[in-house]
Image 1 (spheres, rainbow, N blue to C red):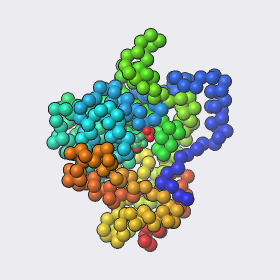
Image 2: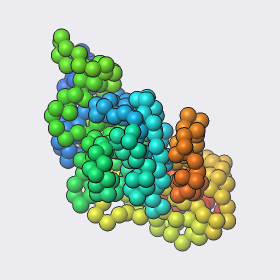
Image 3: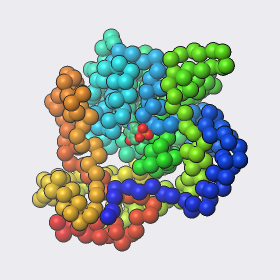
Image 4: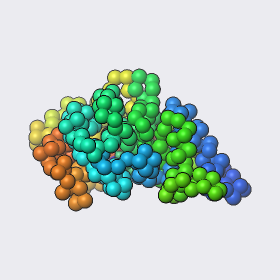
Length: 365
Ligand SMILES: *Cc1c(COP(=O)(O)O)cnc(C)c1O
């Protein structure tokens, strides 16, 4: 069985060394030594100033919105994983969906202004598949209208543009370290921020709002990363560059083998961007002669489990379907992309032979 992704697990003996230390110290969570070390090493590796670790990405998103006291309406994209919009709903914020760009599937900055109302307080874009959003345009609009920008950067681990981490964009960026992501801590997440005051506030909020032994500054949540997660992260970090390189080779092989198949298109690397190859989406149009869903089912019968990220659109789910901005007429590009996309298997241990076999199946229909 070939799945769309598979986590990389380092040799168990190496992880045991970390576990032995946890057993010795008997310190399991609450800013332990591995937690502190992972924050330090990640900040250096990613090229960011401040990072706060979280138990998962969804709680990091919810807490980021709490931290900046976001209320009212937030402009976001329907072409993402549901957690993006759920984090707004959990904060009693009304999501306002705008359409995406047809090349990379990111929130289209040209659609933002028309969606701004007196209730709008922030924009929440997503770097879909790790392709950087048009930050320049988004930030300019945010500055003009006095809005915050919170990036759902769950797919953007280690993405750089012109040598700089895109995680430094906006007011806050949120990462996910879920088992299915490029870098994982089983479950986990993080917020990147730009100053020590915000870092402290986030650290308080993820620990019940506890500021010190006698001061609680806010109705915070429990969203702390524990020592076992942090230890696993430290171990992953040792391998991460070779893992991303392995993914790159797989992406290149896919591109080479799929390039002449009519009706199949895919995304290319963007000049000046260091990608992480977290996903390999292809798009199936009428020329192919078969629908996306037919191909999906056929591959499934051959035990190849691709995924239709992101279909259905978030705006199609029952919670959000009734919102005015959810109408397909408002989201024509997103609706089209969701109908055509298929994410093919990509992960470090995927054999080149398997990639060739998958491409053969797509070619032979
Ligand atoms: C994975 C993901 C999340 C949620 O992260 P978890 O760590 O699974 O809670 C949020 N947004 C996007 C775009 C994601 O892909």
